[in-house]
Image 1 (cartoon, rainbow, N blue to C red):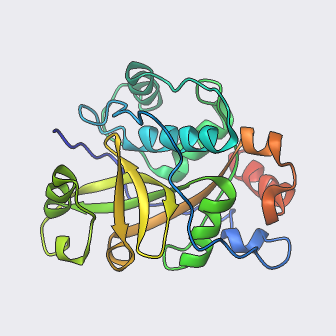
Image 2 (tube, one colour):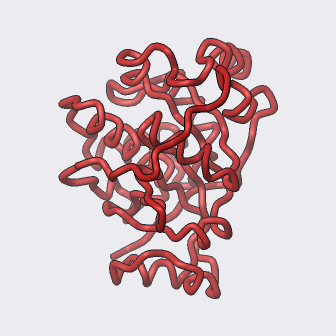
Length: 239
């Protein structure tokens, strides 16, 4: 299998605060575990040929959200994901900054999907990260991947501390779509990849709670988040 990357260095716009800033009171406690949504085929979405992990990662998040909400939404094909990526990058296969890409999709949509709001979550704040996954169906995250982690993926093994003493292969985007007491569960390269919490603390650079348009249509209260305040900050950022 060919592994491609494409996540550029994290950027955190000053106009948008951490997700906890927008909590309408104490955040609800996340459940002890969230099952990975039942998606028959996550798809590679071109990430074996292009550094479009930022595009693939967000589409995989949309797929998880649709599965949880019970929506019959056909996913974009590989060619569509690649085409969207190359349109966004003006034809250059040079990757994306996740926060900038979220802003773009919020303004332009993605094959019938849209991003109603997004906010950063501290990668060290596991309870809030778990809240984002349980409340919004996924978290959009940026990590570094080592060569040993590639080998673990090829062998169907979880990513653990044992995989970190190895050269870095690239910056990568993965959505977290479930978790339990032992692992976070990410989607990457068309499959579900368990990540041990001990490894997560070393490989994770950024995480974003993403509230989709489908979710706001079904749950207008923001699930514990003051959505109008967050959207007002995003609108100022994107003006």
